[in-house]
Image (cartoon, rainbow, N blue to C red; front, side):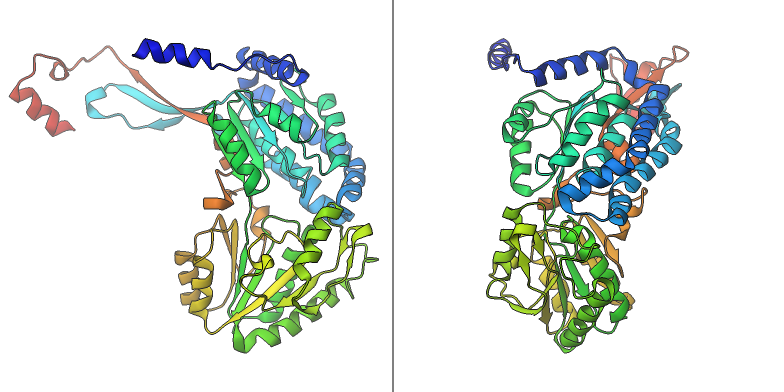
Length: 473
């Protein structure tokens, strides 16, 4: 029966493609087999070159981000180029420690000897980037893959064509071309890549495509990391500092015009405080962005007309208390506050991914927690409170990829916190050591000495041997 199964497996092996992408994949596999990527020196050199690429081309990166998303220079630096440089510097600083084998204790029966865990690279990996932070979300996973000693094919998002083209142009000029490749394109190109037997697939994007990626990976038993999204709730205790809460919520919501996987998706607050908080929100928007008109250079653009139309449809029929302007030709959607949308409405059932902020009211604080718990687990959850008991209840009861207390999105700046989803918001994590671990296999190693060879482990067995084994187990 076993022989028959082997034959069946061999019969369904994928036919080798003659495409350029497959040739690149095979070349990268060959490079990995050469062992060159495993050395500390090679990894540091590639990380340094990626850092140099980003520093040398900051102006080009800013221009491309403005073309794709209308990002101002501050956002382009803070969330894209600067973020990546900081990530690389931190990785280089800690890499030697991460690569060092970790000692483990030895069981008595295996003495004398030594045990340790060695992090080894997975092999040739596929990184599929996202369009909302098209530079950072494509290359930050690559930082982790390089640190772990892998080869990689990078697939930037076709929805951000300026950045995709720039990455395809720059990466081969700075990194080892025998170990890294960029494949541009859309659905067809991605579909072909997913037929290759990668050693890891890292995907950032939506839940629907995430399921496709996971299904394709299953054919080769390829492990996946899925960085997805969801509706990240923002719970407000009405007795907290509402002015500071509003400033931090507006900051998190307006970054990249709301096109952020961890942006506050909706606000929950007790009924008695709702109108007061909405007034503070409106005041805060005006303090930071004036009347939020499209001529404000600090306000970006929606990625394309289709997504702008989608957001416009979310506004229809809602009680808009601030904003609501849409200019489809210029891909502009005005920051908008919506009061008490129906729970059956599309805006409360789909990730918004734009500058629309529903504010819902419930009777009491405990209902706020229950509301969040009854819905799919979000990528991020936020709570604003000075009530320690309520804070602890939120931490203990709400399951989310990340949780931030009294702020939004700022946790992304920490290299020491793993970032990833749970449930439908994703699986796996990265940033800092978590990224190194994501692209590594923790190999258990035990070394035995010949000095002592306990006979109690060998047959013939006896009651005496069994009693000794039970004693030392």
